[in-house]
Amino acid sequence: MTLAGLRVAIVGPLPPPEGGMANQTRQLAELLEREGAEVRLVRTNAPYRPSFVQQLRFVREPFRLVPYVFQLWHAAADADVFHVMANSGWAWHLRAAPAVLIARARGISCVVNYRGGEAREFLERSSPAVLKIMAYASALVVPSAFLQGVFERWGVRSSVVPNIIDLERFRPDGSSKRYAHLVVARGLERIYDIPTALRAFALIRREVPEARLTVAGSGPERAALVRLSVDLAIADAVNFCGRLDRDEMAALYRSASVVLNPSRVDNMPNSVLEAMASGAPVVSTNAGGVPLILRHDVCGILVPPGDQVAMATAALRLLRDRAYANRLSQAALQEVQQYAWPQVRQRWATVYASARAGARIEVKAA
Image 1 (cartoon, rainbow, N blue to C red):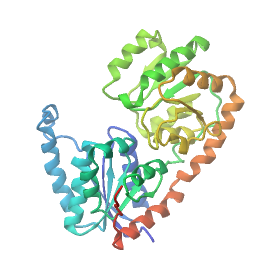
Image 2: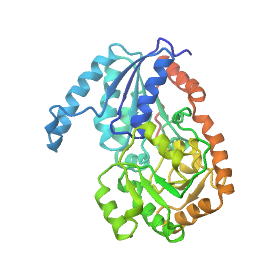
Image 3: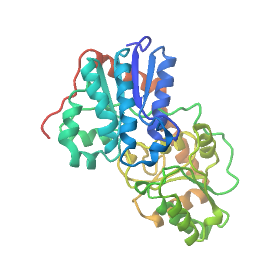
């Protein structure tokens, strides 16, 4: 199937802030337009208008929901297919579910692109409501075999289309690293367990006093993390730089000696794939779907969640044994080739063709 002329309404978040799903939404829209598709974006994280509504906890969501539903309704008038970026929790109920229902009401195909690493816990709490809505859609697409397995346990068949990595932007520069620069590129939220990375870095600094750490991300845990860095006596060596745009992130990865991913919950993190594509060796927890994209001792190192000693030990090995680090980085560069647009493009074309032909998600008794 050619993508030229296809009318797609992509429903999802956009930067700012920068983030995995927001970047994937923007990138997919750009790539489909290059293929000649007509793309309309319906943003799920549009700014509140008026802006002061954001401070009104129990009022702000209706202020955003009403115009959002209005935009969905009008986008459906000119679309062949809805492509709905979906996540767990209230993001499903307030963003994805209305899009699926409006697509059904307007008689157009709908692809649910579910990306939440907490899908198992969410389905355990809310499966009857979620699966009832999902059955109205044409296809369920997930980015990893890990999430595919989660939905299979609930009797839902899905297709795997991996995240897209821009290998022109995220690429190695071939230069040697002049000092020990470690990078964490995750949101400052509890599920990403940045404290473990800070404690691991404190151990690393005992062995490599000149080491530096950059934490690229924003979130509600920032103040607590800054305090922890002071308590660990590493504040002078840690830079909480906030969220960076994609070009700034690409440059940061290229400057990294090691990238740490301390997450306790994960699916198919863009940050890990982008680091791999940038030639930075990665130490990650083996949470969720990470072992399916980062093979231990082949293209990175996996450690248990919450184990700062194991994380520090792995990072020190990479800092001290550059031949070993280079071997992992070269293998990682080969691994990420499968996430380039030329390899992913046909998978999306097949999904859209099936959806337009009248396919429906198969939901069986779990």
